[in-house]
Image 1 (cartoon, rainbow, N blue to C red):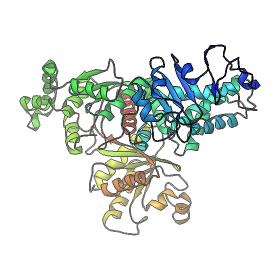
Image 2: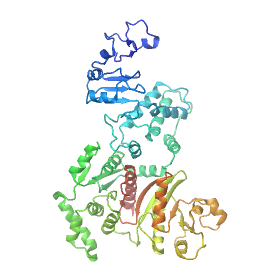
Image 3: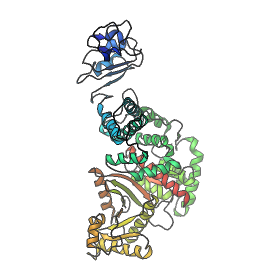
Image 4: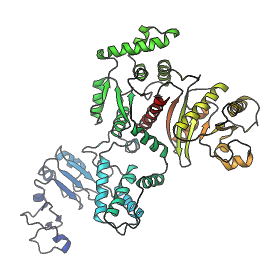
Length: 544
Protein backbone atom coordinates (compact mmCIF):
# COMPACT_ATOMS: atom_id res chain seq x y z
CA UNK A 1 0.00 0.00 0.00
CA UNK A 2 3.00 2.32 0.44
CA UNK A 3 4.99 1.26 -2.62
CA UNK A 4 4.50 2.27 -6.23
CA UNK A 5 6.64 0.35 -8.71
CA UNK A 6 7.35 1.66 -12.18
CA UNK A 7 8.75 -0.23 -15.17
CA UNK A 8 9.53 0.85 -18.72
CA UNK A 9 5.82 0.96 -19.55
CA UNK A 10 4.76 3.07 -16.58
CA UNK A 11 3.22 2.43 -13.18
CA UNK A 12 2.63 -1.22 -12.35
CA UNK A 13 -1.09 -1.07 -11.63
CA UNK A 14 -3.85 -3.62 -11.25
CA UNK A 15 -5.41 -2.30 -14.46
CA UNK A 16 -2.53 -3.60 -16.56
CA UNK A 17 -2.93 -7.00 -18.21
CA UNK A 18 0.75 -7.57 -19.11
CA UNK A 19 2.12 -8.23 -15.61
CA UNK A 20 3.98 -11.39 -14.70
CA UNK A 21 3.53 -13.02 -11.28
CA UNK A 22 6.40 -11.10 -9.69
CA UNK A 23 5.10 -7.71 -10.79
CA UNK A 24 1.54 -8.54 -9.79
CA UNK A 25 2.65 -8.60 -6.14
CA UNK A 26 3.46 -4.87 -6.39
CA UNK A 27 0.49 -3.78 -8.51
CA UNK A 28 -1.23 -0.70 -7.09
CA UNK A 29 -4.90 0.25 -7.27
CA UNK A 30 -4.11 3.97 -7.02
CA UNK A 31 -5.16 6.19 -9.91
CA UNK A 32 -1.69 6.97 -11.25
CA UNK A 33 0.01 5.92 -14.47
CA UNK A 34 3.35 7.75 -14.72
CA UNK A 35 6.53 8.14 -12.68
CA UNK A 36 5.88 11.86 -12.43
CA UNK A 37 2.50 11.23 -10.81
CA UNK A 38 3.92 8.57 -8.51
CA UNK A 39 6.58 10.93 -7.16
CA UNK A 40 4.17 13.62 -5.98
CA UNK A 41 4.28 13.71 -2.18
CA UNK A 42 6.45 10.60 -1.99
CA UNK A 43 9.17 10.16 0.65
CA UNK A 44 11.58 7.85 -1.17
CA UNK A 45 12.69 7.17 -4.74
CA UNK A 46 14.70 4.00 -5.40
CA UNK A 47 15.94 3.83 -8.97
CA UNK A 48 17.54 0.84 -10.68
CA UNK A 49 16.70 1.86 -14.22
CA UNK A 50 18.33 4.15 -16.77
CA UNK A 51 19.81 7.62 -16.92
CA UNK A 52 17.81 10.84 -17.03
CA UNK A 53 14.33 9.59 -16.14
CA UNK A 54 14.06 12.11 -13.30
CA UNK A 55 13.80 15.87 -13.56
CA UNK A 56 14.32 18.66 -11.04
CA UNK A 57 10.58 19.33 -11.09
CA UNK A 58 9.83 15.73 -10.13
CA UNK A 59 12.16 15.97 -7.14
CA UNK A 60 10.60 19.25 -6.07
CA UNK A 61 7.19 17.54 -6.00
CA UNK A 62 8.32 15.04 -3.38
CA UNK A 63 7.71 15.38 0.38
CA UNK A 64 10.06 17.21 2.72
CA UNK A 65 13.53 15.71 3.16
CA UNK A 66 13.12 13.23 0.30
CA UNK A 67 15.43 10.24 0.04
CA UNK A 68 16.53 9.65 -3.56
CA UNK A 69 18.63 6.62 -4.46
CA UNK A 70 19.47 7.08 -8.14
CA UNK A 71 21.44 3.88 -8.71
CA UNK A 72 21.42 3.44 -12.49
CA UNK A 73 24.90 2.77 -13.88
CA UNK A 74 27.01 4.26 -15.29
CA UNK A 75 24.82 7.41 -15.21
CA UNK A 76 22.14 7.87 -12.53
CA UNK A 77 18.47 8.66 -13.11
CA UNK A 78 19.34 12.31 -12.47
CA UNK A 79 22.79 13.81 -12.19
CA UNK A 80 24.17 14.67 -8.78
CA UNK A 81 24.48 18.32 -9.79
CA UNK A 82 20.83 18.59 -10.90
CA UNK A 83 19.59 16.76 -7.83
CA UNK A 84 21.48 19.08 -5.49
CA UNK A 85 20.21 22.11 -7.42
CA UNK A 86 16.60 20.94 -7.21
CA UNK A 87 16.22 21.45 -3.45
CA UNK A 88 18.32 21.89 -0.32
CA UNK A 89 16.72 19.21 1.85
CA UNK A 90 17.36 16.25 -0.45
CA UNK A 91 19.16 13.11 0.76
CA UNK A 92 20.76 11.78 -2.40
CA UNK A 93 22.77 8.65 -3.21
CA UNK A 94 24.15 7.10 -6.39
CA UNK A 95 26.23 4.08 -7.30
CA UNK A 96 29.20 6.25 -8.22
CA UNK A 97 32.35 6.66 -6.16
CA UNK A 98 32.93 10.26 -7.26
CA UNK A 99 29.86 11.54 -5.38
CA UNK A 100 28.82 11.33 -1.72
CA UNK A 101 26.75 8.37 -0.53
CA UNK A 102 27.93 5.66 -2.89
CA UNK A 103 25.65 2.63 -2.71
CA UNK A 104 27.91 -0.26 -3.65
CA UNK A 105 27.35 -3.99 -3.28
CA UNK A 106 30.88 -4.26 -1.90
CA UNK A 107 29.38 -2.90 1.33
CA UNK A 108 27.25 -6.01 1.61
CA UNK A 109 28.19 -9.04 -0.44
CA UNK A 110 31.67 -9.85 0.99
CA UNK A 111 30.47 -9.59 4.59
CA UNK A 112 27.16 -11.36 3.99
CA UNK A 113 29.10 -14.23 2.44
CA UNK A 114 31.62 -14.17 5.30
CA UNK A 115 28.92 -14.40 7.94
CA UNK A 116 27.01 -17.06 6.02
CA UNK A 117 30.08 -19.23 5.45
CA UNK A 118 31.30 -18.93 9.02
CA UNK A 119 28.10 -20.52 10.37
CA UNK A 120 27.71 -22.84 7.35
CA UNK A 121 24.32 -21.32 6.49
CA UNK A 122 22.25 -23.45 4.10
CA UNK A 123 21.13 -20.32 2.22
CA UNK A 124 21.07 -16.54 2.40
CA UNK A 125 17.61 -15.50 3.56
CA UNK A 126 15.83 -12.19 4.01
CA UNK A 127 16.64 -12.07 7.72
CA UNK A 128 20.35 -12.12 6.93
CA UNK A 129 20.00 -9.36 4.34
CA UNK A 130 18.03 -7.18 6.73
CA UNK A 131 20.61 -7.79 9.47
CA UNK A 132 23.36 -6.66 7.10
CA UNK A 133 21.44 -3.51 6.15
CA UNK A 134 20.77 -2.60 9.77
CA UNK A 135 24.40 -3.20 10.74
CA UNK A 136 25.57 -0.93 7.90
CA UNK A 137 23.05 1.73 8.96
CA UNK A 138 24.26 1.64 12.56
CA UNK A 139 27.87 1.91 11.45
CA UNK A 140 27.10 5.07 9.46
CA UNK A 141 26.27 6.85 12.71
CA UNK A 142 29.54 5.92 14.41
CA UNK A 143 32.61 8.24 14.37
CA UNK A 144 34.64 7.65 11.21
CA UNK A 145 38.20 6.27 11.64
CA UNK A 146 41.14 8.35 10.41
CA UNK A 147 42.12 5.68 7.90
CA UNK A 148 38.80 6.23 6.09
CA UNK A 149 38.98 10.03 6.22
CA UNK A 150 42.52 9.92 4.82
CA UNK A 151 41.58 7.48 2.05
CA UNK A 152 38.77 9.77 0.91
CA UNK A 153 40.65 13.02 1.56
CA UNK A 154 37.98 14.34 3.90
CA UNK A 155 38.26 15.47 7.49
CA UNK A 156 34.52 16.03 7.97
CA UNK A 157 32.99 12.59 7.51
CA UNK A 158 30.16 12.24 9.99
CA UNK A 159 26.52 11.21 9.76
CA UNK A 160 24.64 13.84 7.74
CA UNK A 161 23.01 14.29 4.32
CA UNK A 162 26.37 13.83 2.61
CA UNK A 163 27.26 10.73 4.62
CA UNK A 164 24.39 8.32 5.24
CA UNK A 165 26.27 5.14 4.38
CA UNK A 166 29.80 3.96 5.28
CA UNK A 167 32.57 4.19 2.72
CA UNK A 168 33.55 0.94 0.95
CA UNK A 169 37.09 1.11 2.39
CA UNK A 170 35.89 1.28 5.99
CA UNK A 171 37.74 -1.57 7.79
CA UNK A 172 34.96 -1.84 10.39
CA UNK A 173 32.51 -3.31 7.88
CA UNK A 174 33.85 -6.84 8.30
CA UNK A 175 33.69 -6.65 12.10
CA UNK A 176 30.18 -5.17 12.03
CA UNK A 177 28.29 -6.84 9.19
CA UNK A 178 29.62 -10.42 9.24
CA UNK A 179 28.67 -11.08 12.90
CA UNK A 180 25.22 -9.56 12.34
CA UNK A 181 24.64 -11.84 9.35
CA UNK A 182 25.94 -14.89 11.21
CA UNK A 183 23.63 -14.20 14.15
CA UNK A 184 20.64 -13.71 11.85
CA UNK A 185 21.37 -17.06 10.20
CA UNK A 186 21.48 -18.71 13.62
CA UNK A 187 18.29 -16.99 14.83
CA UNK A 188 16.43 -18.02 11.67
CA UNK A 189 17.49 -21.66 12.03
CA UNK A 190 19.62 -22.16 8.93
CA UNK A 191 23.09 -22.22 10.54
CA UNK A 192 24.76 -25.65 10.63
CA UNK A 193 27.75 -24.50 12.72
CA UNK A 194 26.51 -21.96 15.26
CA UNK A 195 28.95 -19.59 16.94
CA UNK A 196 29.10 -19.92 20.72
CA UNK A 197 31.99 -17.57 21.54
CA UNK A 198 31.39 -14.22 19.86
CA UNK A 199 34.51 -12.65 21.33
CA UNK A 200 36.64 -15.39 19.79
CA UNK A 201 34.82 -14.94 16.48
CA UNK A 202 35.53 -11.19 16.50
CA UNK A 203 39.16 -11.99 17.30
CA UNK A 204 39.31 -14.33 14.31
CA UNK A 205 37.86 -11.66 12.01
CA UNK A 206 40.41 -9.11 13.21
CA UNK A 207 43.22 -11.57 12.57
CA UNK A 208 41.97 -12.07 9.02
CA UNK A 209 42.20 -8.31 8.53
CA UNK A 210 45.93 -8.34 9.28
CA UNK A 211 47.33 -6.87 12.47
CA UNK A 212 46.05 -8.60 15.58
CA UNK A 213 45.87 -5.94 18.28
CA UNK A 214 44.48 -7.89 21.19
CA UNK A 215 46.73 -5.98 23.59
CA UNK A 216 44.90 -2.69 23.02
CA UNK A 217 41.52 -4.40 23.15
CA UNK A 218 42.40 -5.86 26.53
CA UNK A 219 43.60 -2.48 27.79
CA UNK A 220 40.46 -0.82 26.44
CA UNK A 221 38.25 -3.24 28.35
CA UNK A 222 40.25 -2.60 31.52
CA UNK A 223 39.98 1.18 31.06
CA UNK A 224 36.22 0.93 30.51
CA UNK A 225 35.87 -0.82 33.87
CA UNK A 226 37.38 2.18 35.67
CA UNK A 227 37.30 5.33 33.49
CA UNK A 228 39.39 8.26 34.70
CA UNK A 229 39.36 12.04 34.32
CA UNK A 230 41.66 12.88 31.40
CA UNK A 231 42.71 16.45 30.55
CA UNK A 232 42.92 17.17 26.81
CA UNK A 233 45.32 20.11 27.06
CA UNK A 234 45.08 20.97 23.35
CA UNK A 235 41.31 20.90 22.93
CA UNK A 236 41.37 23.69 20.35
CA UNK A 237 42.18 21.12 17.65
CA UNK A 238 39.66 18.92 15.84
CA UNK A 239 41.51 15.62 16.24
CA UNK A 240 41.71 16.08 20.00
CA UNK A 241 37.98 16.79 20.16
CA UNK A 242 37.09 13.83 17.94
CA UNK A 243 39.18 11.55 20.15
CA UNK A 244 37.51 13.01 23.25
CA UNK A 245 34.09 12.28 21.75
CA UNK A 246 34.95 8.65 20.99
CA UNK A 247 36.63 8.17 24.37
CA UNK A 248 33.57 9.55 26.16
CA UNK A 249 31.14 7.51 24.03
CA UNK A 250 33.11 4.29 24.57
CA UNK A 251 33.33 4.85 28.31
CA UNK A 252 37.13 5.12 28.32
CA UNK A 253 37.41 8.36 30.24
CA UNK A 254 35.76 11.52 31.49
CA UNK A 255 37.24 14.19 29.18
CA UNK A 256 38.20 17.65 30.44
CA UNK A 257 38.86 20.12 27.63
CA UNK A 258 41.34 22.99 28.00
CA UNK A 259 41.15 26.06 25.80
CA UNK A 260 39.06 29.00 24.67
CA UNK A 261 35.45 27.89 25.00
CA UNK A 262 34.16 29.87 22.01
CA UNK A 263 36.87 28.47 19.75
CA UNK A 264 36.31 24.92 20.98
CA UNK A 265 32.55 25.16 20.43
CA UNK A 266 33.14 26.54 16.93
CA UNK A 267 35.32 23.54 16.04
CA UNK A 268 32.74 21.20 17.58
CA UNK A 269 30.03 22.74 15.39
CA UNK A 270 32.17 22.75 12.22
CA UNK A 271 33.02 19.06 12.58
CA UNK A 272 29.64 18.00 14.00
CA UNK A 273 31.25 16.57 17.13
CA UNK A 274 29.03 15.60 20.05
CA UNK A 275 30.61 16.68 23.34
CA UNK A 276 27.48 17.92 25.07
CA UNK A 277 28.01 18.13 28.82
CA UNK A 278 31.80 17.78 28.70
CA UNK A 279 33.65 20.25 30.94
CA UNK A 280 35.53 23.02 29.11
CA UNK A 281 38.08 25.05 31.08
CA UNK A 282 39.66 28.25 29.77
CA UNK A 283 42.78 28.44 31.93
CA UNK A 284 43.18 32.15 31.01
CA UNK A 285 39.65 33.23 31.99
CA UNK A 286 39.04 35.34 35.09
CA UNK A 287 36.79 32.66 36.55
CA UNK A 288 39.82 30.35 36.80
CA UNK A 289 41.84 32.85 38.85
CA UNK A 290 41.33 30.98 42.12
CA UNK A 291 42.44 27.73 40.54
CA UNK A 292 45.50 29.39 38.99
CA UNK A 293 46.49 30.70 42.42
CA UNK A 294 46.00 27.28 44.01
CA UNK A 295 48.08 25.52 41.35
CA UNK A 296 50.77 28.23 41.51
CA UNK A 297 51.08 27.76 45.27
CA UNK A 298 51.53 24.00 44.86
CA UNK A 299 54.07 24.50 42.07
CA UNK A 300 56.05 27.22 43.87
CA UNK A 301 56.23 25.25 47.11
CA UNK A 302 57.54 22.24 45.23
CA UNK A 303 60.28 24.18 43.42
CA UNK A 304 61.06 27.04 45.81
CA UNK A 305 64.57 25.71 46.41
CA UNK A 306 65.17 25.62 42.67
CA UNK A 307 64.62 29.32 42.10
CA UNK A 308 60.87 29.28 41.47
CA UNK A 309 58.96 32.25 42.90
CA UNK A 310 55.21 32.35 43.44
CA UNK A 311 54.80 35.09 40.80
CA UNK A 312 56.68 33.00 38.21
CA UNK A 313 54.60 29.96 39.10
CA UNK A 314 51.37 31.94 38.74
CA UNK A 315 52.39 33.25 35.29
CA UNK A 316 53.02 29.71 34.09
CA UNK A 317 49.44 28.75 34.94
CA UNK A 318 48.26 30.72 31.89
CA UNK A 319 50.03 28.06 29.78
CA UNK A 320 47.83 25.09 28.86
CA UNK A 321 50.56 22.53 29.58
CA UNK A 322 51.42 23.83 33.04
CA UNK A 323 47.75 24.28 33.92
CA UNK A 324 46.65 20.86 32.61
CA UNK A 325 49.53 19.01 34.26
CA UNK A 326 48.89 20.94 37.48
CA UNK A 327 45.31 19.66 37.44
CA UNK A 328 46.74 16.15 37.73
CA UNK A 329 49.28 17.17 40.37
CA UNK A 330 46.52 18.81 42.45
CA UNK A 331 44.17 15.84 42.14
CA UNK A 332 41.60 17.64 39.96
CA UNK A 333 42.26 15.17 37.14
CA UNK A 334 43.81 11.72 36.83
CA UNK A 335 45.84 12.06 33.61
CA UNK A 336 46.82 14.63 31.00
CA UNK A 337 47.47 14.40 27.26
CA UNK A 338 49.36 17.07 25.36
CA UNK A 339 52.09 17.46 22.74
CA UNK A 340 50.25 16.89 19.46
CA UNK A 341 50.51 20.60 18.65
CA UNK A 342 53.26 21.63 21.09
CA UNK A 343 57.02 21.36 20.89
CA UNK A 344 58.04 18.24 22.75
CA UNK A 345 60.74 20.02 24.73
CA UNK A 346 58.19 22.53 26.06
CA UNK A 347 55.74 19.81 27.06
CA UNK A 348 58.28 17.55 28.77
CA UNK A 349 59.78 20.54 30.60
CA UNK A 350 56.37 21.35 32.06
CA UNK A 351 55.80 17.71 33.02
CA UNK A 352 59.14 17.22 34.76
CA UNK A 353 58.85 20.54 36.59
CA UNK A 354 55.25 20.09 37.78
CA UNK A 355 55.00 16.37 38.62
CA UNK A 356 58.69 15.42 38.66
CA UNK A 357 60.54 12.15 38.13
CA UNK A 358 59.62 9.09 40.14
CA UNK A 359 61.61 8.47 43.31
CA UNK A 360 64.59 6.19 42.82
CA UNK A 361 65.04 7.17 39.17
CA UNK A 362 67.36 9.68 37.57
CA UNK A 363 65.87 9.53 34.09
CA UNK A 364 62.64 9.27 32.14
CA UNK A 365 62.16 7.49 28.83
CA UNK A 366 59.70 6.86 26.02
CA UNK A 367 58.23 3.52 24.97
CA UNK A 368 56.44 2.63 21.73
CA UNK A 369 54.30 -0.44 21.21
CA UNK A 370 54.71 -1.96 17.75
CA UNK A 371 52.06 -4.39 16.48
CA UNK A 372 52.50 -6.49 13.37
CA UNK A 373 51.69 -9.98 12.14
CA UNK A 374 54.55 -11.41 14.19
CA UNK A 375 53.08 -10.09 17.43
CA UNK A 376 53.45 -7.20 19.85
CA UNK A 377 56.83 -5.60 20.52
CA UNK A 378 58.02 -2.84 22.84
CA UNK A 379 60.71 -0.37 21.69
CA UNK A 380 62.67 1.91 24.07
CA UNK A 381 63.90 4.60 24.36
CA UNK A 382 62.18 6.14 21.35
CA UNK A 383 61.80 9.65 22.67
CA UNK A 384 64.14 11.27 25.17
CA UNK A 385 67.74 10.20 25.80
CA UNK A 386 69.97 11.00 22.82
CA UNK A 387 73.20 9.25 23.79
CA UNK A 388 72.50 7.42 27.04
CA UNK A 389 75.37 6.51 29.32
CA UNK A 390 75.42 3.19 31.15
CA UNK A 391 73.36 4.34 34.13
CA UNK A 392 70.77 5.93 31.85
CA UNK A 393 70.53 2.81 29.70
CA UNK A 394 70.06 0.74 32.82
CA UNK A 395 67.22 3.01 33.97
CA UNK A 396 65.62 2.69 30.54
CA UNK A 397 65.75 -1.11 30.70
CA UNK A 398 64.32 -1.27 34.23
CA UNK A 399 61.60 1.29 33.47
CA UNK A 400 60.63 -0.60 30.34
CA UNK A 401 60.49 -3.90 32.22
CA UNK A 402 58.08 -2.43 34.79
CA UNK A 403 55.94 -0.77 32.13
CA UNK A 404 55.56 -3.87 29.98
CA UNK A 405 54.49 -5.86 33.03
CA UNK A 406 51.70 -3.30 33.58
CA UNK A 407 50.22 -4.56 30.32
CA UNK A 408 50.08 -8.08 31.77
CA UNK A 409 52.89 -9.24 29.49
CA UNK A 410 56.07 -10.88 30.74
CA UNK A 411 58.99 -8.97 29.17
CA UNK A 412 61.68 -10.91 27.34
CA UNK A 413 64.27 -8.25 26.64
CA UNK A 414 67.14 -7.87 24.20
CA UNK A 415 69.73 -5.12 24.60
CA UNK A 416 70.64 -4.26 21.04
CA UNK A 417 73.91 -3.25 19.43
CA UNK A 418 75.86 -3.85 16.22
CA UNK A 419 77.78 -6.78 17.73
CA UNK A 420 76.98 -9.97 19.62
CA UNK A 421 78.14 -11.05 23.08
CA UNK A 422 81.61 -9.56 23.30
CA UNK A 423 82.59 -9.39 19.62
CA UNK A 424 83.59 -5.75 20.23
CA UNK A 425 85.25 -4.65 23.46
CA UNK A 426 84.92 -0.88 23.09
CA UNK A 427 82.27 1.78 22.56
CA UNK A 428 78.55 1.10 22.59
CA UNK A 429 78.75 -2.74 22.58
CA UNK A 430 80.96 -2.76 25.68
CA UNK A 431 78.65 -0.32 27.47
CA UNK A 432 75.55 -2.36 26.63
CA UNK A 433 77.28 -5.54 27.77
CA UNK A 434 78.17 -3.90 31.07
CA UNK A 435 74.56 -2.81 31.66
CA UNK A 436 73.35 -6.36 31.01
CA UNK A 437 75.90 -7.73 33.49
CA UNK A 438 74.69 -5.28 36.16
CA UNK A 439 71.05 -6.22 35.65
CA UNK A 440 71.88 -9.96 35.69
CA UNK A 441 73.60 -9.42 39.04
CA UNK A 442 71.11 -7.04 40.68
CA UNK A 443 67.85 -8.22 39.09
CA UNK A 444 68.33 -11.90 38.18
CA UNK A 445 64.57 -12.38 37.77
CA UNK A 446 64.53 -10.13 34.68
CA UNK A 447 64.74 -12.03 31.40
CA UNK A 448 67.24 -9.86 29.53
CA UNK A 449 70.40 -10.43 27.54
CA UNK A 450 72.80 -8.75 25.14
CA UNK A 451 74.50 -7.12 23.56
CA UNK A 452 73.09 -8.63 20.38
CA UNK A 453 72.15 -7.69 16.85
CA UNK A 454 68.47 -7.35 16.10
CA UNK A 455 68.29 -10.41 13.81
CA UNK A 456 69.52 -12.64 16.63
CA UNK A 457 67.10 -10.96 19.01
CA UNK A 458 64.06 -11.70 16.85
CA UNK A 459 65.07 -15.15 15.55
CA UNK A 460 65.26 -17.51 18.52
CA UNK A 461 66.44 -20.47 16.40
CA UNK A 462 69.30 -18.44 14.98
CA UNK A 463 70.13 -17.24 18.48
CA UNK A 464 70.02 -20.77 19.90
CA UNK A 465 72.26 -22.18 17.17
CA UNK A 466 74.88 -19.48 17.61
CA UNK A 467 74.58 -18.49 21.29
CA UNK A 468 72.94 -21.35 23.24
CA UNK A 469 74.33 -19.92 26.50
CA UNK A 470 72.04 -16.88 26.34
CA UNK A 471 69.80 -16.29 29.35
CA UNK A 472 66.87 -15.93 26.96
CA UNK A 473 67.68 -19.05 24.93
CA UNK A 474 64.63 -20.46 23.11
CA UNK A 475 62.52 -17.51 24.29
CA UNK A 476 60.59 -15.12 22.03
CA UNK A 477 61.88 -11.60 22.53
CA UNK A 478 59.12 -9.00 22.83
CA UNK A 479 61.07 -6.01 24.18
CA UNK A 480 63.93 -4.24 22.42
CA UNK A 481 66.21 -1.78 24.21
CA UNK A 482 68.15 0.31 21.71
CA UNK A 483 71.60 1.77 22.42
CA UNK A 484 70.56 5.33 21.56
CA UNK A 485 67.62 7.51 20.59
CA UNK A 486 68.44 7.64 16.89
CA UNK A 487 68.34 3.88 16.37
CA UNK A 488 65.13 3.45 18.39
CA UNK A 489 63.25 6.34 16.82
CA UNK A 490 64.29 5.49 13.28
CA UNK A 491 63.39 1.82 13.73
CA UNK A 492 59.83 2.26 14.93
CA UNK A 493 59.04 5.08 12.50
CA UNK A 494 60.46 3.10 9.58
CA UNK A 495 58.22 0.14 10.41
CA UNK A 496 55.25 2.47 10.60
CA UNK A 497 55.89 4.32 7.36
CA UNK A 498 56.56 1.27 5.17
CA UNK A 499 53.28 -0.22 6.31
CA UNK A 500 54.62 -3.18 8.23
CA UNK A 501 53.21 -2.25 11.59
CA UNK A 502 50.89 -0.19 13.72
CA UNK A 503 52.56 1.75 16.51
CA UNK A 504 51.15 3.07 19.76
CA UNK A 505 52.87 5.74 21.78
CA UNK A 506 55.06 7.29 22.86
CA UNK A 507 54.29 6.13 26.38
CA UNK A 508 56.01 8.35 28.91
CA UNK A 509 57.90 6.33 31.53
CA UNK A 510 59.32 7.56 34.81
CA UNK A 511 57.14 10.57 35.65
CA UNK A 512 55.41 10.77 39.02
CA UNK A 513 51.94 11.12 37.49
CA UNK A 514 50.20 9.94 34.27
CA UNK A 515 51.31 12.66 31.85
CA UNK A 516 51.65 11.56 28.23
CA UNK A 517 53.05 13.58 25.37
CA UNK A 518 51.72 12.78 21.92
CA UNK A 519 53.53 12.80 18.62
CA UNK A 520 53.17 15.96 16.54
CA UNK A 521 49.97 15.91 14.43
CA UNK A 522 48.72 12.67 15.97
CA UNK A 523 45.71 11.07 14.29
CA UNK A 524 42.44 10.52 16.13
CA UNK A 525 43.31 6.85 16.48
CA UNK A 526 46.75 7.68 17.88
CA UNK A 527 45.19 9.99 20.46
CA UNK A 528 42.51 7.47 21.35
CA UNK A 529 45.13 4.78 21.93
CA UNK A 530 47.01 7.14 24.22
CA UNK A 531 43.81 7.96 26.12
CA UNK A 532 43.57 4.25 26.87
CA UNK A 533 47.22 4.10 27.95
CA UNK A 534 46.77 7.20 30.13
CA UNK A 535 43.73 5.68 31.87
CA UNK A 536 45.60 2.41 32.49
CA UNK A 537 48.52 4.44 33.86
CA UNK A 538 46.12 6.31 36.16
CA UNK A 539 44.58 3.05 37.38
CA UNK A 540 48.01 1.77 38.39
CA UNK A 541 48.90 5.17 39.84
CA UNK A 542 46.14 4.60 42.41
CA UNK A 543 47.87 1.39 43.50
CA UNK A 544 51.39 2.81 43.80
